[in-house]
Structure formats: structure tokens, C-alpha cells
Amino acid sequence: MERLRRDLGRSQVVAFINPKGGVHKTTATVLSAAAMGTARDGGVIAWDDNELRGTLGLRAGSARHGRTIRHLVEHLNEVEAAGVHLPEHLDEFLRHSADGSFDVLAGDEDPKLQRHLDPTTVLRVLDILTRTHQVVCIDTGNNVESANWRTVVSSVDRLVVTTVPREDAAFSADWMLDLLEENGYGHLVQNAVTLLSMPTPNQGPLLEDLRKHFASRTRAVAVVPYDPALEPGAKIEFSALRPGTRTAWFEAAATIIDGL
Image 1: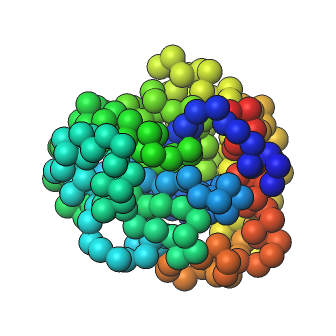
Image 2: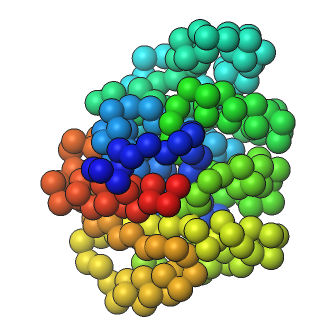
């Protein structure tokens, strides 16, 4: 808790990445934000920046309204001009986690929105979020060639590589790290955290090999266990997890915060 609560000096941006679907990016974003927000008593936001109908808003936020990133982009000028009232104006477009530990900027179901999330718009949204929150957790999309994805990566303080102990998921993460190094982001790769998430009660034979492999590529590796509360793929509630699972997510979140 001391590691999670320490003063970060300024707002920090953390992106959860892996171009393959089904590797717990959304789960990791939600539970990391929940662990950080619980420890820090708020000040954390999770942004669903998945370009193709991400589910973070459905799985993490209370549906007090249907507004998404699309509505924020449509009102970006007036939100930016809110001055000292920025937090109140932004809040009109946010949802909140069930326990109130973090805020949620939901993705939109309209795939045409990605045409409007150009690099300039992404940076404007990030500027607003970093002015109102201490930690911004971003659930990224799967298209590493998109301008949106590349803009987010170039703007983060820490990358969190999410994967499950399967060959295809790990290969995708490894390939992505190679791509990042080739494009001048070697410093982000060296300081990244790999998050290995267990999708079943059985850890499987690959876990230790993958732990060692990604420990050689990234700054740290965190392993979080399977939890039956996550299996249905429904709303994620931190308090519904087993005590041991919550402890593991607190440790994983502290590992992400370390060194920021």
C-alpha cells in the first residue's frame, strides 16, 4: 500500500498493450485501476481506447448515462475551456466503478469514431485526463499500425504487456516488443511490466518459461491468479474477487507504479 500511495510528482499514463485479443487487456486495465484507486482513494481513470467496440465501459462502469468518448470528442472545445471547472465538466462524460475507486471513460460502439480519433484529438483527450487524474490507465486496441495506437504509445510513462500463458498470446506480445524496439521505443520496453494472467485454475506448463522469458525483456513480471468471479465475462467488481486474488492485483499494481 505504501508503494501504491506514494507521491508520483505528476500525472502518469499507463497503457495496457498486446495486439492479440483475449489476453486480458480489459481485465488488467480495470483491476489495475481498481487496485490503484482503492489504495490512493481515487484519482485514477480507465480509458477504453479500443477502436473496435471495446467492453471496458460495460464491464467496469456504472451505467449512469450512455455517454462515451464520442460525446466527449463532440464537446472537446467547451470541456477544454472549462478552466477551474474542468473536473465537473469532464465528469458529465465519465462513468464510475461500482465501488467508486476509479472513473471510466467508455469506448464507443460506432466503428466510424476511429476516424475522429486522430493523433491531435488523442493528445487533447490525454491532456484533459492528465489534468484531472493522477493515474490514467489506457486499454489499447489491437492495431499496432493505427495512428491512435502509436500516439498513445509515444505518450505513455509505462507500458504493461498483458498476456496469458499460451504460445500464441506470448508470441504476439514478443513480436510487439520487437516492433517497439525497431521503432525507437526500446526505453519503454526496458521499463515495461509484463502481466501474466491465469485464465484457468491450472497454471499450465508454460508459465515459468514465459515468466523467465519476459523477465529478460521487460523490467518486471507480475503473475495474477485465476478467479471464478472473472470467468463469466460480466461486470468486474474488485470486491467480488477472492482475498488472495485482490492481494495479487495490489502487488501487480504496485509493480506497475514502482519507478514512475
